[in-house]
Image (cartoon, rainbow over all chains, first blue to last red; front, side, top):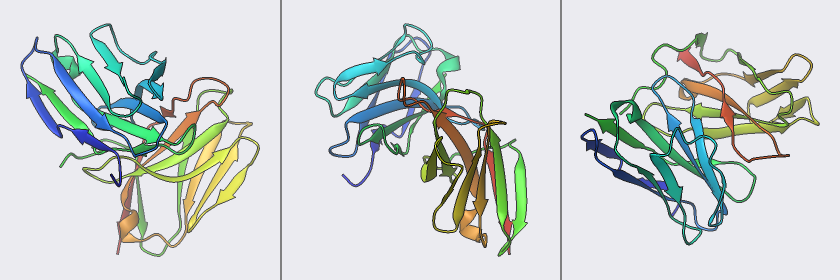
Length: 112
Length: 113
C-alpha cells in the first residue's frame, strides 16, 4: 500500500479482555516500530523489529504486552487482560532500515 | 478525530512570519534528531532530520539547528502558512544502539491569517 496501515482504527473493549492490534507496514520496509501515544504527549516507544526479529522490547510496560512479526511484514501487538490504564492511541511506524520512520494512523484503544 | 496536544505549549504567529520551535533533548549520546509534524487526527509526519556531525540543515522552508553543547534543537519555519498549524515534536535517536526514537514534549503552532 501507499502508507502504513493499522487496524482496527478504533477498539473498545472491556477490562480483562485481550486485544490484538495489527500493523501493515510500507511494502519493503525492513524495520517496524510500535509506539503508544497519550493525549497531549509525544509517542512513547514500545518495541521494534528488523525483519521478523524483535530487536528491542524495552518499552513494553509489562508482560501483558507482546508483539510479533512472524514473516517480517505484518505485525501484531497483543495486550492481554486489558486494564483501563492501557487506553491510548497505539501507533505503528516503519522504515527502510534505520532511516526515516513513517507513521500509521493509529488504533485508538478504549478499555471500559 | 482526536485532538492532539490539548495542554501543550503554544506558539502563535501571523501568516507570513517566521516561526521558531525549540526543543531540549535529554541524552548526550543521541546522534540523530528528527522533527515531526502532527495534525489533529493524524499520525506524526516527518519534516526534517539532522545527525550530530552537523549543526544546521535546511529543507524547503524549514531549517533545523543543533547545539550539542547545551543539548538544544530548534526548528525554523520560514513564511509560516495556515497549513503549518499543527503540533510539532522533536525526537532523538542513537545509531550506536537500538533504533528507537525518544520523543520530546510537543509544541502547538497556531498560524493566524
